[in-house]
Length: 337
Image (cartoon, rainbow, N blue to C red; front, side):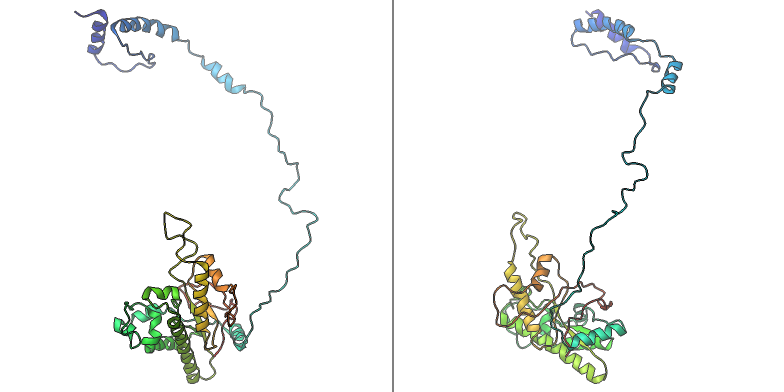
């Protein structure tokens, strides 16, 4: 047996489809029981009747836009004719700047480079690693006689070639000199004990031998070129590159404060390399390819503890891949032969 509410609902569902009216009636709440369904059905008609309000005339709506509320005008807090960006009428005293006085002891190379840069653009050599790759060297080439029984693979240690294959490095230096380079760099980009540890060659005597041999080899190349071309002047720069360690980033994700190396260890590594590169008394270090201010600072800061001989001077400079660009804006930091 069906009650009135269920029959009424069935009739509504069976009614044919009709388009929606222009004004939709308010939504009828869903009944939860037959009694509530009957009560809501009876109240819906009265609710529609009570909520239906007369439409507002269009003229009254237009008058609301014609007569806006009285809003005071916007006032500028800056008085008229005042320029807030103008400088003070009585500025303070201008500081006196003194000319920079370098404490680096100058040698004959300073004057020679300064005079050369006033005449023309000076050039520096290009990349060393890509030139070495053209020779397609094998493991035996990197070992030579000195490291024939070394217990670690040495292929890829390009700095080692100044000892095992000096003819290759000499040919590359000579090619750059013949190409017009005024400055050639020693093949010591990875000559620190930190980088040499990847090949188990971090011993101080090995690091010293490799760096000094590279400096002497570059010096011989410039001497031979100047003897072949009288009147020319060539210079040698000691290359000091980066390490595989960093002082500014932690190698451990779990411990941001952890560092793979200490500050003193980096200072010692750069000092030992610079001491060996300057042993032939031909140049000052040419810093290149590093990142991170802590590491750059270690290359220009003297040791805090005494050493048997003063640390060679070093200055940081920016290197790019276009190594044949002009160096005329830099201070001459190199020593001549």
